[in-house]
Image 1 (spheres, rainbow, N blue to C red):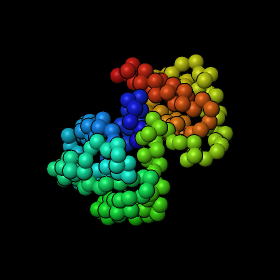
Image 2 (spheres, one colour; image 1 turned 30 degrees about the vertical axis):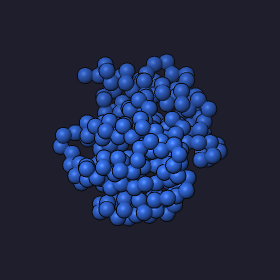
Image 3 (cartoon, rainbow, N blue to C red; image 1 turned 60 degrees about the horizontal axis):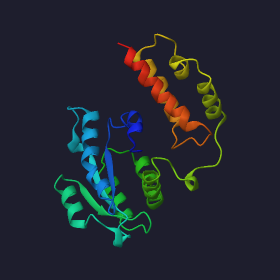
Image 4 (tube, helix red, strand yellow; image 1 turned 90 degrees about the horizontal axis):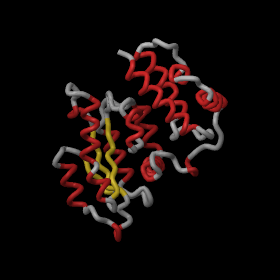
Length: 224
């Protein structure tokens, strides 16, 4: 998921009921390794004190191990961080494919409650899947042009146009003034899925997505 602070309002919708987590860091970037603790803290906060973290499968991926000359976090340090917390640890490379098949095999095999169809989807092309994840991380949470299908739907284009012409936050989310928190959140989630920059390549999608996030935040502040 995109790591920029702006996308927190999207990330926090996906923590609930997590069954498996991939924590990926760049072995050549100390800051990405140091950030692992903050990701765990955010996840625990969003899942709540009643969440059973022990039931979640955690995989730590030390990525870009093919770039040996620029490595600043060695295997021993990464492995210690992971295994001291009871997490699985793998040395991986999205470029060469090193460690990725094995990592996904362990990841899916240990998730006893994950539907079989989801396991098959993830493990059918593990290197391509993992490479797209790391590409998004390196590109500010957006998929690279080479990974994005050309074109967009009429619904996406019409929605962006409607948001641009909205007169206020209620109109932007498509809810009536006085709507409940649940109605606001439901409308927001629908628009977020439709317009998220990871999925929508229509011109103006990023600005429209930001406007939707800001509209939701503004409305929720005023709803008791």
